[in-house]
Amino acid sequence: MKKEVIIYVLLIIGLFLWLLPSVGQAATVNCNLGQSLQGAINSAAAGSTIKVKGTCNENVLIDETRINITLDGGGTATIHGTSVTQDTVDVRGRGIVIKRLHITGGNNGINVHRGGTATIDSNTIELTNNNGVLVGAAGFATFINNMIQNNTQHGIGIQDNATAHIGFDSYSDTVAQPNTIQNNGNQGINIQRSSSASVVGNIIKNNTYNGIKVRRDSHADISANVINGNDYNGIRVEDNSGVNLGNTTGSTIFDLSNSTTVNNGIKGISCNIGGYADGLLGTLNGVNGATVFSKGCVNNLI
Image 1 (cartoon, rainbow, N blue to C red):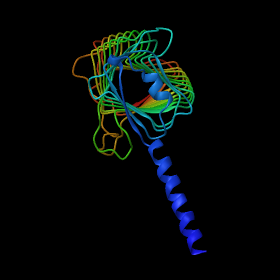
Image 2: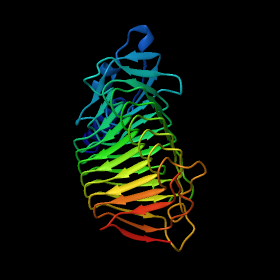
Image 3: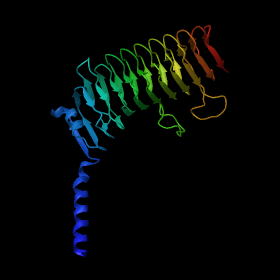
Image 4: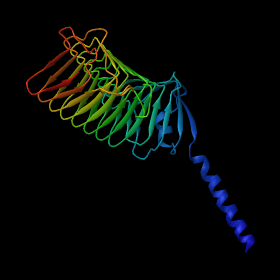
């Protein structure tokens, strides 16, 4: 009986060791050698890290079956979406990390949707046909330490019951991890259609319309950002949406006011059609002054 138990234990250990290599693997894909990033994603087990090298001229899909997959470009690799009708990186999996990559081309540079979740860390995302990053259809994304610039539409779009942390990871953070969102062809950040975002500690500048726009029954907590030189307003809120700009008490990154050092093109903050703004005005400003609130908007700024 004792011998049978020992054999059984050895079989269990052997099975565990046989399965172990399939979990948390590290793989390297060098696209300059003709290797396929999509192929590596398709075969990646949960917990795997794919180290990306070279320039990958492909649009890739991280589908619903992928869990806790990391794409790491090491600060030198590029993913360029060759089809402008598809997203360069389409994220539908859970716990996906995309970091240290240069992402260009495609429709959206990254699209996190269909309930997908992602951390987008230390990338440069630019020169896309639409948005730098879109989070939609009940997706969730965290944005830290990125440069998001020179995209045709919004730098970051949040829509359709989606949620985002922009500039921090967790509400326990004591310092921001700022993104720079600049020179995009529409809004710097666009939050709409029953979506929400916390936007903390970023540099949002020189976008063609508003630095941040919140509309269509959406909400944003906006604190400790530098919002400069956007062609329209620093912040625009409208269509039964609201913004909270820091807090009147407290000194964390989530309490601090926003600032302007280079005036935005119209106002620091503009409100229209049943919106509201609460909290601290800070030094938000525009060429035509700090605020404008149309009839039906609630101004509770200090």
